[in-house]
Image 1: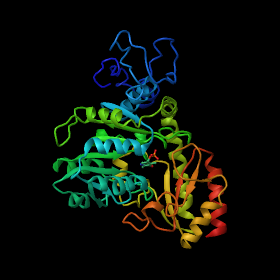
Image 2: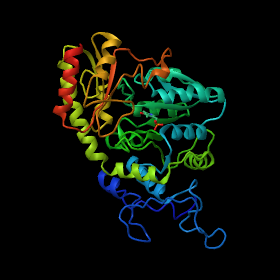
Image 3: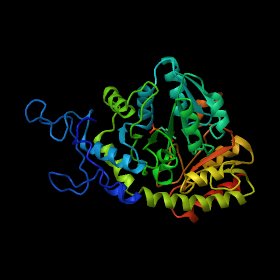
Image 4: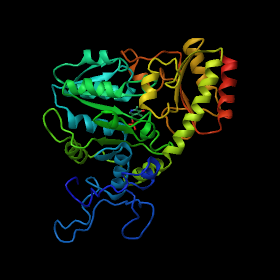
Length: 402
Ligand SMILES: *Cc1c(COP(=O)(O)O)cnc(C)c1O
């Protein structure tokens, strides 16, 4: 509970570097046994020492659970925010956040290549609730400014975007949102806090699908929110308090084992991201030289339209690449099906390399909308395998099929 001092222990790791925080923030040795890893507190309720006499603030695990608290403190420390919140999935986190921030009659600006599930949430869940949105090309600050209305309460940003790896200028968009009295929310899933810390760039709230780089091993579905200290809504409500209230009131929380898996993933985030980036850079170079490839989308390329912005706000350029092939949808889907080391699958951010066809898979739900993606597009989630093996497998498929 936010008002319980024991649950909001002071962060003694604030001055440490990223990996030290990832390994230690929220993860003091267990007070009862000294276990160096926070135990999986697989429990629903807690003994009270007399009515209301809660031990360290724990009462019922929807409201708070020690394993989840450890993860929430860790992600808050990594994003440099006031408080972290952990959920059953990325979309559960986003739904909770949006219902905490918005009311029927409000308006949101949504990016033109948002994650398909996020767009579906806006379009098919929030619209019937009475929250409207306009779609803007998020890489273009003026297009976002033009989409803002008097009722706009939230500007939603993903950067890099999925699947076209567009880059939004977080600082510039924070200014545009704030001038309009709106909050800037950044979905930081693709970059991870290791490569990009939106709150330091002026954003108000960060969300993650912890299913991706935070968890990092394709073995858990989870979501995270981090709020900035002292943040208030346009209605002058305390955002951290409201998100905490909605987390408990809506109940889409991360279970203890899922929280533990994400926490374990975060410990190695820095080393994994360095390797994801190393491998991605080599693969981009290979793809650019392949005659069957017509376009490569990667923010690290100097030819990327917002490369300068990416270089300013990201430590490196990440492990996601998309590219287009000669021969259209037919060839693109065949390439996806005929790699061996690259597994055909949705999702991203795990240690294993994944390949997919956004038009028919992750982004099938936005076909026929403004968010439709090119049919000859292939998306790669570059794994941390040996890069020569990853390139050889792509080469055999592209050589044969393009
Ligand atoms: C996967 C993803 C989500 C949704 O998260 P889930 O954990 O699948 O609910 C949201 N945003 C982005 C950018 C994603 O990649």
